[in-house]
Amino acid sequence: MDTINYLTRVEFGAGALALLPAVLKDLAIQRPLLVADHGIAAAGLVERAMGTLDFICPTFLEVETNPSEAAVHAGVAAYREHGCDGIVALGGGSPIDLAKGVALMTTHAGTLEQYALIYGGMERIGPMAPVVAVPTTAGTGAEVGRAALIKLADGRKLGFISPHLIPKAALCDPELTMALPPALTAATGLDALSHCIETFCSPKRNPPAEAIALDGAGRIWRNIEKACSGNAGIDVRSEMMMGAVEGGLTFQKGLGAVHALSHALGGLDQPVLHHGTLNAIFMPEVVRFNAEHVGDKLARLEAAMGLSAGTNLADALDDLNRRLDVPAGLATLGVTPDMLPLAVERALADHSSATNPRPATADDYRRLLDAVMV
Image (cartoon, rainbow, N blue to C red; front, side, top):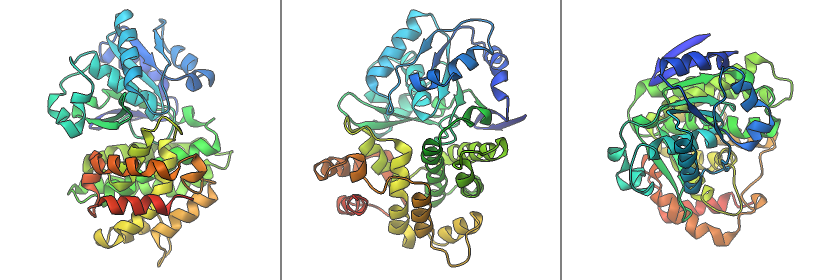
């Protein structure tokens, strides 16, 4: 078992879930609210987490694919009803982001919107209820990230960012990902890869984060197809989970146009779109869009990922999407042309747009969307 202290405490390795009681004790959490979703419960993982404890804690399972403001308020009500003093977030990015939203709003007054980054919310966020994150996918990096993405009642998917939103501890147990089906393994793994690529290409200067991003990109690239094969062992699942953690650790540099577009479409009520799948679809086109504005970074990524000399990263990403059966484009997901103007508007306003290496205009975002409207 490895203990890593970088931004927060990370317990990493097969069997890390067994450390949950000790971590709760260290954080003086006596009555946690367990936040997960119905899929996690159906897979037996809620019961598995509960089995490590010598008490029954209340649960909140009403988490959507794209966590909503309404679910945050419902979670706050459950937290207060049961007299909770902390949260265990079990699942992928959606339960972890929802847990962060609940932890924020149990300790802060007013509307959720005022804490969004684009409205100066970072300065308004102070100490929150403690969160222990237990990821069940190798994807979002939310277990070590300082952000939560939540869809407001009006459909805007906004970023809430603060060091206070980083979970107090993360239990990263690759055993919890062993039963993840190939399609979800692919979508979440490509989400993690997008974090490494986008943060590495961000124009902000942060060499330590860049080194982590390169390492994470290499781990994911070398293992994602093995992980999706249906018979991946714990070693492959461990590499994927470490790559996802590293993607989350690099968030300090900011993301880019891939995430600005994914956040914009993730706010739609219909169709309900998976964040990682959107990132996978957008990533090759955004890499092409930024290629002349990132210096030697694409070559450094290609080297770290073990791509042969002369390989074009964007083309390699396209090929990987095809091999992993990622949906060909937005139209196959139910996105229609009449949805694109609002997506452009929201992408321009998204906090990730500001750290794209090439400034993107409304016309640029529309061209990027049109390019993937297959």
